[in-house]
Length: 304
Picture 1 (tube, rainbow, N blue to C red):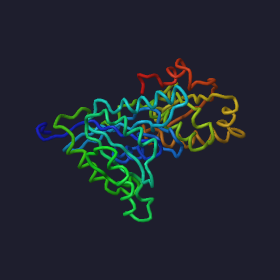
Picture 2: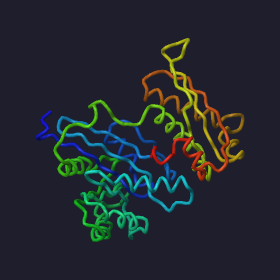
Picture 3: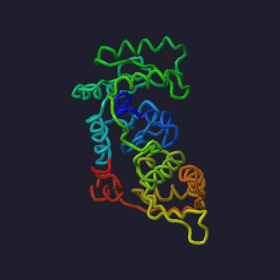
Picture 4: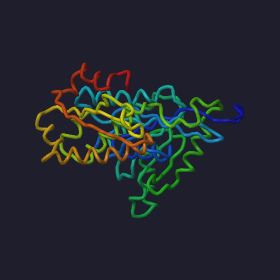
């Protein structure tokens, strides 16, 4: 590696919920490190994804979708998103094709005016348009709202214009060394990634208020004493109400059994070993508004 020609730096991905930030991160990294769901506010923590090639290393930060907070947890999520734009080399502001400027996007762009680094407008999900030229409407609506470094209509699902965007980001990065080992894909420990995979399966299996009221903590993770080919994992699912606990368990335990089976498959792919997984469900009343509970469940200000 020649540091005189090697590019390296940090890129924050910011936007409202459900524009495809986590899907983008997983795609560029080449491995699932951020969970995905059609539920708003799926991403709660900043997730670092590292892309390393012979020519560059980019550390992307996926952030919680910016929304109007109604709980202490949501307030910390929004603050984490804006904090992620500090100290980076450039920012991806991601949105989707729209027929009028969304208020949430206006608020984000107003806050981004404080940043001094290049900001790219990335319009994801163009595959949902009837005609690709329809993207011109969104471009014309947004291009005068902010002095963007570049504008990129993309489709993560169809891998459309992704290479063009990455090449332009590379051009904006400074010359420098690798900050992370070349085989490192994320800075989060396995326990965090496992807890997120379990939470994702619950998001997929529940609706209404339940998805926003759950937290997952991996209590123990160790090699099985009787069979070293297996890893024993014990995790607790926290909810806010007894009624939510009943929903998570399901009729005759059907829902939690389904969550367990689906989680095991993803965890095996993540750690490369067979898994024994035990799940417990406990009630922590109103944990999303209690700073002491947020700290215990991994949502302290330092953990974001």
